[in-house]
Image 1: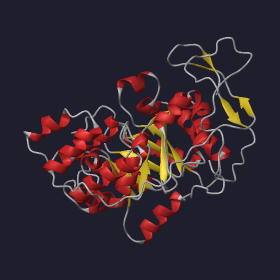
Image 2 (image 1 turned 90 degrees about the vertical axis):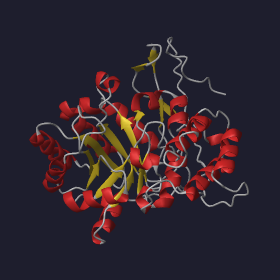
Image 3 (image 1 turned 90 degrees about the horizontal axis):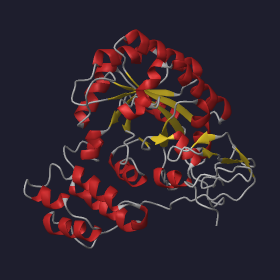
Image 4 (image 1 turned 180 degrees about the vertical axis):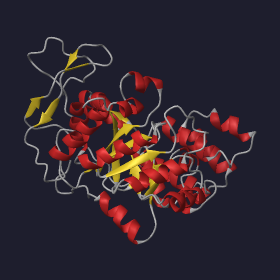
Length: 392
């Protein structure tokens, strides 16, 4: 990272304070696996979003594998405020992952709300709702080891026994959590089920830290109504904002200028976005725009050029585009300092012993970093894992 140009930091607590003073709420783009990349975060911030999350990242893989770090996280100088969400089942992995991303984000979030069977099986997501001691230790460790203005939050779902949910939230407040995100469904409910607004309201009134409400947001009117009913501090949209990135601006479907911006973002840094990411976002964005006959044709396109030609021909988007959305300069951070070998673990792929490194010369009072792409190699380890790149 070029130390002459530090990435600006945002104090997330100020977002909530300013919203409260204005009698409104913080508008939040949810952590969505594969879809909350920096390009999409840049897009939605042009349409009323105040705070973005990264996709959920597995903390252990992120620490151990440079390829995971490169594929799961990217950022630019203007990508703020942004919170990195991690899935972890122990404090060591979470804190080390948070340490790696401290120079590049404004906070970290622990996922205690993912109901997927694979996550539950490995002790991630909703599995942590029955292990509050682990959650509390993660929060305390982050607050003790990283600067005070670096946000620590937790995302949960409502338990069938609401009292247990409230008790957990109150305990997290005592541990120092900066804010909470509460999904208004239980771990066993489906995305189409109604959210429990009375339960959400009770959670909001039971704690003094800001609460972001999540679930069922398809329009700005949905978000406004939820805010008015439960008196939360923020509203988070997931599938709704995926289908309509301009949701928080009041648009009822994706505006063509939003599609225009998405093309701009791809054109500015085509090497930084995969075709799958570019195309899949458009499949969601065009859901209410394309006709029934156009959708299957568009869904089968497999090159950037074919997608763009389709958009120009069918949506009346001019090929000569002005830059309307600035992606800004991408950050890279290469390991070049003395390191120490961190605790030993097991490779999720091959099962061999693995090690990873943390720079011992990093000053956490600054916002620069120099170990984000560090590799792992311990000369005393005879089980060097092949998931890591050899140093060049």
